[in-house]
Image 1 (cartoon, rainbow, N blue to C red):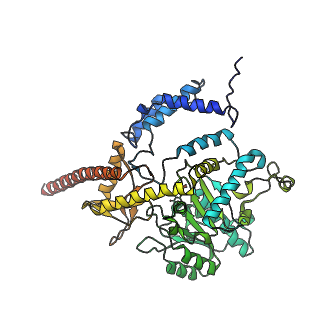
Image 2 (tube, rainbow, N blue to C red):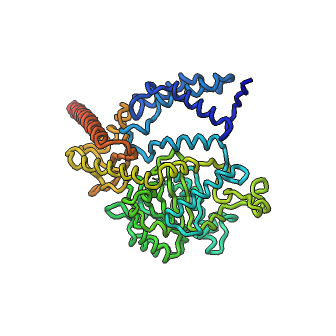
Image 3 (cartoon, rainbow, N blue to C red):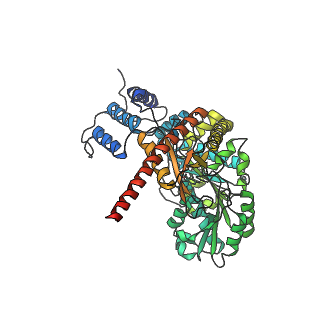
Length: 508
Ligand SMILES: Cc1ncc(COP(=O)(O)O)c(C=O)c1O
């Protein structure tokens, strides 16, 4: 008699059925469903309409359509109307195409439904996370006392780092922010470069330090924090309490790395916590060619690293490393139903005490699968390839009279703009037009360029597809220039029509 298939899965039991369902869904969503471009053609409202018409009225259906139909319907929607990160003209964000091995391991993580808070909520995944954290701390060059934890993104890892730094600064003054809150800290202050990621400011707001606690340090012409300016800002802090110096290893727009050895020496001399936001740049350590960029990272008190950026993981796969794992005490709690002391003493502890989460999914599985499959150098060669593509883009811009390079390439981003009279309007519209056509996806940002007194719209490629070729980059630039010329011509026509109308109104 055939055994009745369970609705539930776990690794080893029902797992084969998960594989079969995946195959069925993949077959029902044939490649022909794909729009063949980075994005669907059309406006955001068109996608909303497609979803509404496929899923029906916005109420939870009282009866289901069955698993196969449900999966096929959703698979079809995301294939037809979603973003394709594997497309060679997808180049906007720090959002890489995910490696197949990581996608499969992520399904395995779902099937375990393990949690990392206690031993009994997932023994194997807990041990694998401890293994992976030790290996990443070793790669960072941190000492034997280092520790770390996976979390749901670089913004979260930065928040957790600043919370731990805040409590460290408080305890140095004999204060207890854990019980008394941030109000107990006399005028806290956090130092980071003017182009640090906005999650640092938001973390300060969330921690009750206030965004006004952030002191933005000037950067040099290469977009790297000026150590002398940091030194002066610390000296000028007076009676304020320095909570942390945040150095960025891989700025979001330029990929530039603050001078870590100099900044570490300053922070050490002044006794201030050094956090390195290496969400983007940590992956340099995978490459023998690029590892030198983050020299000095081993002197950090804490490091944020995101493997859903350079690491080719499905989001999220962020890690916060601490040089001294004892500092996690700031977030440790004893909870009777999870980690009673006698259980911990008997060896049944988990990682509840290292994070702000309680239930926490084993994102580590996809990361471990990736490193086991490819090794550090396998990922390093993917990064080298993306770096080469960025250098190619840089060279192409140099030969294009219509384009202007805004900064030399450091990692895998390329910031540039289309030269024209109405810079902001034309550059912004040309990007939207590319998105609307579906044919290419590039990024945008704002930069205070040489000689300008305010930030101006610039365009950005974030190249994270190592399977793209130089010819793909060239074709992307051909598209950009073609659309830019179109937008510029329309813009000039509109401006001259406005000027004619104005003149006519003066005549009457
Ligand atoms: C330098 C830097 N830090 C932090 C973050 C935030 O990471 P996440 O988007 O995973 O929260 C980003 C995101 O791009 C980043 O570039």
